[in-house]
Image (cartoon, rainbow, N blue to C red; front, side, top):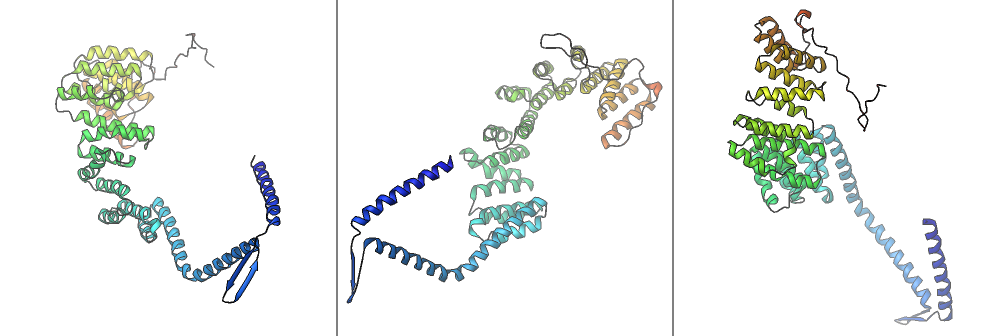
Length: 418
């Protein structure tokens, strides 16, 4: 298609040249120039050609005269771009001292001044030289004020001055002119300074900006919502905040976990149970399974029966088995607790399961085995080798191999194993 366009253009130009030549040949025009007794006669076409040639010669002469004077500026631009490239590479490689030096040199070129100073400030901040980073940002603010404010907030937050970072970004946030990076910094700084209202307010524009990927945004959202709920001073404030959250945020597992634990701490175990059970009906979550078992001793028998019914659909879930074991420990059901915890350890060893098993043996007045379990919990948390329990101390009534889940077709018909 592109070749045909070129051919068509050439045909049009050829036709225009042919018609133009005939038009000029009929009457080429006449130009007479007289100056102080000097006289020149020619046609219009020849005069135009002479003028074009003269303009080309003058342009070449002007370029030749300017070239020596522009050599220094060209060398300056070339070196500045080279230093910019080397500085950014050094910043990515972690050579922050070299990066800061090269980027300051690159900032001498006006077109690179803003980005070079911003990157130099980031390099100084990563070295821990926050005072020098702020000084560099004062210069960068004259060229790129919005980016400099966002980076200044990041430096202040890294320096433990989260409240100052919030105050710096608050005016732009209130006017809706904050950049996506600014919303992220505002959320993090507000979270660190305890300003939960601003932290929650930054979530919606940050999500709409798409500055963070889905996973990173979900983590930040969970942190902000959980911290906000944990900061509720009483049950009334907790319920008010929970009811004001958008429906999507009330389905975040970290938020449900924080609400349920805080509600149980305020004596509202039934609402906490309802929220966790509703969430688990929508989507299975190991975090909420652990939360369900940590809602206190109230109504624990009913919660144990409910949790045991989930084993049919999740027989190989180590967190569910650990939760069941802990609930049995609270009720003094040592045999059931041992079976659940041993199976949990066989599926996915964890320090929590070893600790709960230690509680089982302590409840049975077996101090030696309890101490060994507690030592294993500490060793596993430190990444060290554990000491297995004696064979005689293990339950012989439980098969700790993973249970094969029955697979069914879309019509409910069981599939044969392959």
